[in-house]
Amino acid sequence: MATAVHQLSFSAPSAGTRRRQTRASASASATDRHEVLSPKRRLPLRKVPGEHGPPVLGALKDRLEYFYGPGGRDGFFAARVRAHRSTVVRLNMPPGPFVAKDPRVVALLDAASFPVLFDTSLVDKTDLFTGTFMPSTDLTGGYRVLSYVDPAEANHAPLKSLLFHLLTHRRQHVIPTFREVYGDLFGRMETDLARVGKADFGNYNDAAAFGFLCQALLGRDPVDSPLRDQGPKLITKWVLFQISPLLNLGLPTLVEDGLLHTFRLPPALVKKDYGRLADFFRDAGKAVIDEGQRLGIAREEAVHNILFAMCFNSFGGMKILFPSLVKWLGRAGGRVHGRLATEVRAAVRANGGEVTMQALAEMPLVKSAVYEALRIEPPVAMQYGRAKKDMVVESHDYGYEVREGELMFGYQPMATKDPRVFQRAEEYVPDRFMGEDGERLLRYVVWSNGPESATPTLQDKQCAGKDFVVLIARLLVAEIFLRYDSFDVQVGSSPLGSSVTITSLKKATF
Image 1 (tube, rainbow, N blue to C red):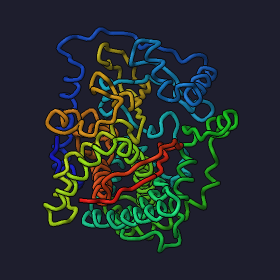
Image 2: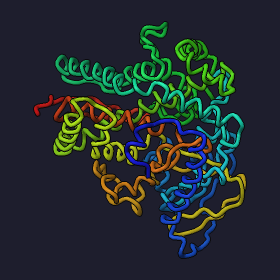
Image 3: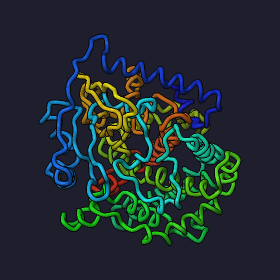
Image 4: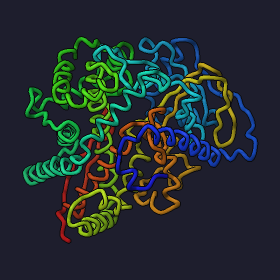
């Protein structure tokens, strides 16, 4: 695994380094699978159990159970594991008719089988970012953006190189901008607490996340543009039009299922909103667009890829991950808060009173607490890959024959909470990833469409911003415990994760 310093650098690898990383990642992946599957013993072959049911009706039945069954999404998958006594099963994935042509998948529901989805020599990733359907390209300026492009396609490497550049060309601005923007967030929350006794973290986080991303990566504050403070609202509406077939908004079942899951929302309804976002990035991102042109990417294609990366991937990720992280830390209680505050403040004092990359590297509990939040509630729950050839996919106990062209689906929470890998798998254990034994478990933290122990390359689909996301999550934890000894939360649910309300902030006393 890369050292903490390497993980925090989030620098784009050189071409030679990328080739070495590809070979190293392949070797590491093979080693990990060897350890997980224990191939010293030949696993018995088993037919993939489960059924898809009659056309249309089978998919509708599974869709209703997935969204509205008593156990929710987790219960939908757990019930099939119990029924078939297998963690590899056949089922239908929503949305089904009439949004997706073919909802049939082979579901991989444990840590052993899941990694096949990362091996691009075995699986094709073309147009599978959102699963069994792809949103209209009218929502992305008429372009298939990087998330939908397979590494074998000629434009994959230039587009991913562009995102590496976006993330690194202003790297020196990331920490100071984060501290300034999120310092303002906590000031506003303290005001709300003093006035009404509570503060909505999610609402303030949306504005802070978009402002931080634009200022740190592009050097432009969107509030000073024609967007003013409307960016987060425009993005949320635009994202809704892309993934509404996968969401449960809490509407009456017949209304919601008929409106969101059966038909696509018309892109024309958000065309004007999307145009405003595109105008902002077309202007604010000129330097990055220039780099895209140097890489052979048309300027307009670069605009829409930058917009998607910053709004859907980055802003969307922060909108889900940060409330989740605050939720799990809030629930961890005062003893954990004390350990974190002590570690953060000691590391900052030892580095001249500044939050630096070196100071963050001296906060192992902070790093572990972030990894544990990514493990227990990964911000991207689902991954897909279409088999390029006939193969045998192995769980812990069996091998399963998968045919060329079959769509495989992995439900990540069942892989990252696999009790055969993680002790106390359903608990948030902040120090789980500390020490050598803890670091060895990082290969099972796969929120980024690849193991945490690997580094993204131009030849894979692992998130280009993997290390950037971990960095800013660690910055959030550090910022909290520089300012406060402890805090309390109230937690609710939202269509995109958790709704978190801060009910108390105990200011730092040491």
